[in-house]
Length: 326
Image (cartoon, rainbow, N blue to C red; front, side):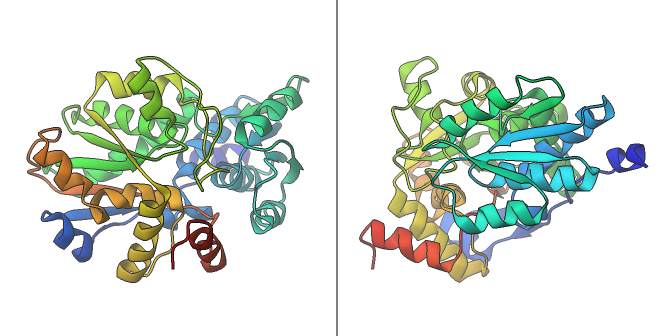
């Protein structure tokens, strides 16, 4: 029974859909990879599902994950599917409804620390004892391998056509590392990746500017629960080695993109996903091309709609009030 459950992926093959609104704004075809409709609402289930399945095969019996939202939900979902216990350590800023969702999925929830980094340190201490396995939200080769499945699906969908560029939001860097692993596998190493971050959670951009791994003093973006102060080393290595263009946007741009996307596509996504969408909504793609930082895009622009469960209309209004947006 356990073997059969371990073989079937826990994620779905997400749709690839053209956005007429985004295509019109960008002046090129924009195809959306809809990771927001994955089980529990984000791409995280690809990597974390793969990690849990592989470790369960090796006999691991209990998992501990640190997360302010999507990674924890993915871990709780994966463990429920595998019939294994999960403990999710969340920071104090985690919305109550996310904690309730985690508990509904059968996870034990521990609240520890102000931001994710604090919760992560606590999760590591919990797995010092034998028998428990730590799940990183973004920093493990099995996670990157799981996330690379997104590119394999794109390859199947596009056939002989190659993407003109990929647009992705970056938090701790796990998805970016997975996308790079995928493009290397399918021979798309020359495809540019536009890595979008909100200022105040811009750990990749700060590391690239400094020329080395650095830690932000604090997460000051509204994506506080989701932000990591330090990008994973693998993502930084990928950004240096491949065609990764780092772009930062402010929280207002990210939120405006969330609202416009809701209007255009009838889907509500987190501010972190809004950061990626603002690449088109705020004109960054066009700006990069004018500045000569991005070559003329000949294939479709692939927008990774990473999704996110830590958002609802009430939260959106709260964010807008915080930023003085009408």
